[in-house]
Image (cartoon, rainbow, N blue to C red; front, side):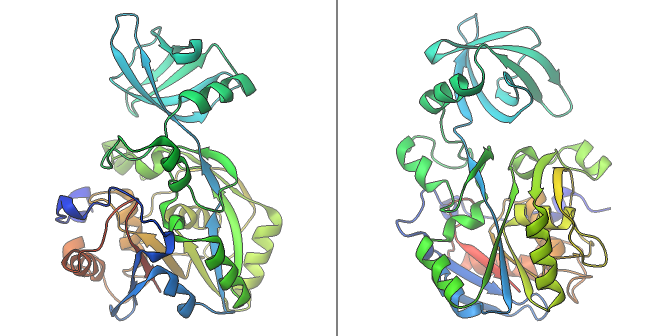
Length: 355
């Protein structure tokens, strides 16, 4: 059985992108043919040269909210909270540093107070009940909350800049505690140029949470599931995507979140159904992809579920290459080439186009 250590690789710290580029589409693009293993190097805006009217881009329109808040326990100890999902008008699931106990209260700026009503030691999640709800809560959160950038990025960057840059230009539906980072490379002019070229563009939603960014735990491997994340694929969107698929168009998922959403909602016949529910899908080799034909994605952390998903996409039965270990796989060799060429890695880094 595969284990997280099978998906390891060496990355110099200096290649972890700490800031976004001033121009989103000026990032580099490494193009991988998963059937042959051949590589090409380009700029992201040159994606325009590789897509045409036989292609469909599927984008995740989720919007990041300022989910990171700092509070204080009655003892005076500081607490960092990451809000994950709203469970009722005044309650949220969250993870914290340090951990919390049921019954504890936490005070925040703007007279916001939370009480811990539940804790799950298996997932490390708490449920927090706040003294504010609905519009009042969101007004306070927008004042005191911080953009939830990953811990490997310098945490002392201007909040105003992060709220703009750690957000896709097409984000519309609030609900993510992390950005679907493959989409960060797109600009409005680039999207317009793609549409003018005849590329079909469709939007789905997956609200990014622990299923995407939490480190793998033993129960993930035991149950072969990840933490639930909400997916919404409307009926009319599913209809258009099915029509495109049947007509022979190439379905290109922008990001692993979009991929998880589409694969959660499709069956072995390659048919996509409308979907409005949580997904816990955990994709790793060898798993056949039912709906996605190509993938635009960033470079992912070692031993992560995202790296496992991309490894599955680039190996048997989706390519001729059987997976044994990441380092010896075509994707592993691609990552090695990216390291040697000093590509920028992770959330604010460069991109790959896997066809």
